Length: 498
Ligand code: UTP
Image (cartoon, rainbow, N blue to C red; front, side, top):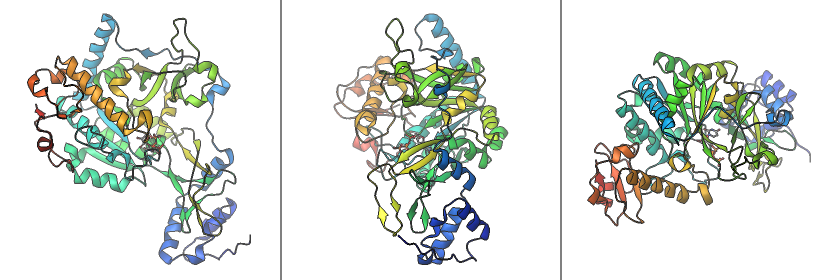
């Protein structure tokens, strides 16, 4: 087919941009220039001016610069691991760690990073995933559940906890609005820092040509949760954290409402072991579970994708039948601020990974195509690739039921129904541990403002719990941010106040 390339209006397109497009073999991006309004032309030029042409060229050529380390050296099971408490000695260690974690929290040395820039394509929710109404009784959003954990932790340790929320082009506006409209869920706005991650063009997986989302817009995609390092650096947040005396960063993802934000025991182990990068793991359910796996390669702790672990290794067992590579990634990490600064100073030198995605695009004739196969390559960095850069890394095991239930898709194990079930089961376990009789078969939700663990539930009026209605355990300070129902107390009269 013949294409007539309209000569772009040179007052809008600089000659250096034209040269860059031409030497990158991406002139087709201006194919529809003649049909665009001046505003659309400006927007397109603006988009193109932000592209790092050298980088995208290299990535498209190599498809991924990431090193599949296990292809070079055989991984071995990790050995610097704190397993879940089984003995009284381990209980003592745990108590020591928890006390130390409490100290660093009280001293204001901890900040939280929440990554919420993902597009949540599998879930198919039209808003940022953090706005998903996950509360099994209240319909609280993921953002609210997570933010309230930070509020409650700040109160508990009488401190302020800077809350760094990473967004992307596709989630920024709605996220900032959601927090503002909901009174920041009780956080002080001066402690909340929204910052945006970078994005890269999506290329055609066959030709390496950048795809157009429409005639005047390039297909862009966020640069992965590993983009958090350069985004923090770009936003000047390392300096801010330093000036606030923050030494440790608790990192977690927006999709896991069970996460124990700023878990003092985890912080304490991190400090005790002089770790620079620590990660929480859960025992894999089976060799075939699709979860990243903790390994050691050349003495360095790494997380590798399940698909990168050779089958003979993923199914290898110890004499007692347990998996050798048992430790599954939960994406809950603690980093020293100085360590992340070091990694980010190296230009955010985390490797790139390429993922094939179905990407709608505009074809040569200007028609929008909804592809039936993974036609596009998007490039991402993963935060866990920072782990092997640490001289001292630590792995801390936790129980899956207590801390890991990520919301990923519409069906199956990581669906809304399943995550809500895990939240209810978790609440029941806490109530039982607090010595309370639990009503059978009704949804139960515990506000983070009421309890951060079972100990906080001791002394609840037990008879209030014998309800056939959904139970919401609210704190006295709990504010109703809910749109539906407008008042939890009205909708659920058996709410148990603290
Ligand atoms: P996932 O890799 O599960 O992606 O993100 P996702 O966007 O939530 O869902 P899919 O894959 O499109 O269905 C894990 C965490 O990393 C964040 C997400 O917001 C989530 O908290 N993330 C992911 C980012 O912040 N930025 C990214 O570029 C990618």
